[in-house]
Length: 477
Image (cartoon, rainbow, N blue to C red; front, side):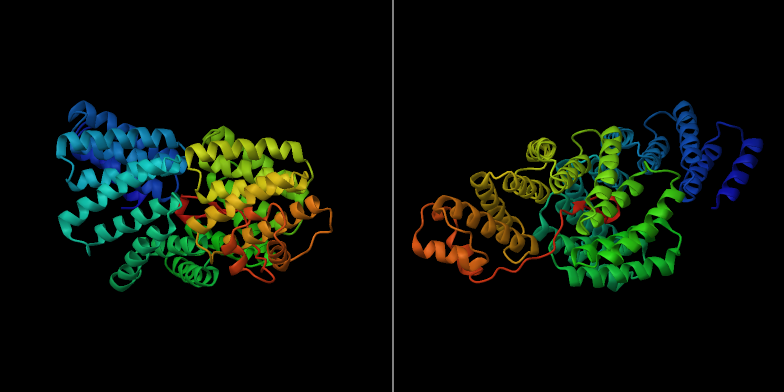
């Protein structure tokens, strides 16, 4: 029902049935949904509050209808950036449905998805992954593995793995889910979501050509079915710009990012909404790629301060911003400030995300670059080695970031050796090979497998510290 139709129905039911009649209260749910679909979030929230109060008074707090209204309030909270409130109410509804309906009731399984989404938005990736996995098991048991609910759940488990940096596991699940969705319901909105999100995952794995091709398909479908002015279309457009950045097309990326930023600022009325911050952050990274570091710093510092206020110091998005800002300060030769930010980001990411999460490795790589700039060549070489070896384990030896980090390691080790030997540094992969062949002191820290694989000149790749955002598979850096 449209908002106008829902409000008309509510007026009629209020007149003939009364304020507390279950049918009247159900109409408030329709108003909330219609208002949310129109991005009228305060109106939707008000309708939810009224429905919850009325149903609690007349039906009780654990009535399925009451819990349904509570669950929808959690959905409304998320785009309003009320993430903690969304998690709290989502968790409450899930607990009550477990108690009243059981763990395998469809409404309980749906609540798991709502709670998991709220947890992901707050950076609680491990809890989100467990909930998504439990939900997948439930839907598969109820309907079988090929049912749409099971396929959706499979994609979301994959997405949860992607948030944790488990790209291989994520690829298997999301790739299978997408293939079946395209075959069975090619124009469904969740198929578009999975297509877009899987393209993000491909980009995470350094498969930029495949990512661009799939991202363009997702963008075309969203444009065709939801229109040119829908915010989800601009999410897809922004990710396409991210791919352009990763493949060195900075001018094209900037043009798109400015377009997306203009839309988001008008649509969300200001600079503090999540999608606006995401776009500003990505634009700042484009400026960094283009060596426009002062412009990048102005944007990144503003975004970081806003993230601190809205998400807190320990949220993954805040930590990404801190790390990215530290990298820009390094480029501006503000090295002591940069080290403070990067060290703090590293410590928190290691605790919250894990020592080998891709985002942690990005921060470690930036910290190694800082050490190099400060002339701490031993520390830089040791850290570059740690990052390279972890990248091989986590991302694979063919990932562009792994190969770029091999180049960083080669350069750093060459500088360290030349200082120790008192000779001029040699350049390229050949320098390290010669150093090993001569058996110079200290070269044992250089892994033999690296020399074998990159013997000769090591290719340099334009790769950035991309930031993984849960919001519909969006990226920034």
